[in-house]
Image 1 (tube, helix red, strand yellow):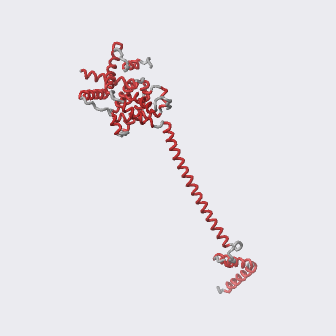
Image 2: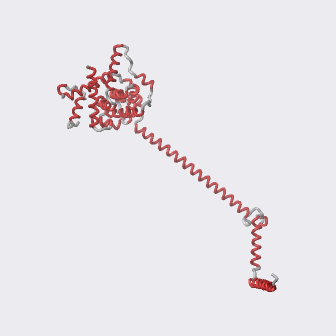
Image 3: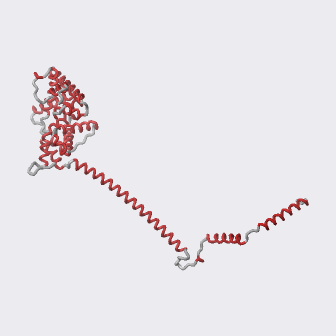
Length: 181
Length: 176
């Protein structure tokens, strides 16, 4: 209680629950006190309600109510549980997706291996010979190999070409001189 | 909240505790909201919240001031919501409404009291009402009141003074 503040002291006296003797109050405080009595007497008359039924009802509820710490912990736990559930769901989804992807790779790899083994004359156990291989690319490859062989087998002679060219040029010169062109 | 063996049961303890402060809390809320069913709903919520934190504040004393501070916050929240009211259990509350007296004279007295109080409270602004009702029901220091309503001490004192002068004016008018 800070009695260094005269305003505070005056209002504490004016609104005191104790019955302050009017003579002990200065006129201004007494006036404030009259205002306080108007309110406090009205409230006292209004306050005549019986609170026992209210207390019984509330007490019955409170006696079974969990303490706030438990409730807040419960909420926290619920939130954590929900987060854990979401995380678990995400993990399951990711692992499921990864498993599917690896399964796809396995399938592709298996198919590739099967394809390769089916068409590999060395590892082919089916009894098919390499002659049974019927791939249209083989024809093209064979044709190219033949052309390459021809090129490699009969390389053009530069001297012969030059001689042929000289001969053609000489013939053209003769024609020019003869005026036949 | 530990119950000592042989001591009151949890419900008995709660009953005594509520009974000790119910008049102040309900009265304060009724003074603010002026509707008994709303005041009782809010009072129930006040006790529920305070009970849940009972272990933390019971040793600090000033329980009533603590309860009234919660009540003030709840009443202010309700005022902000304006029109959104939640009735906890309408039937249950109807059963605890004070029965009207069979005697016409008592009814007249009750009505006159209500009218007097309503007239007195009408003289006050909402914040003046809060200051004076906290002072009356909680016997709170003005510093505590200022903290509860969230204003400087000087402002709380100013609201108190103006409220008292308004009530004094009402008295003068009635006498005239």
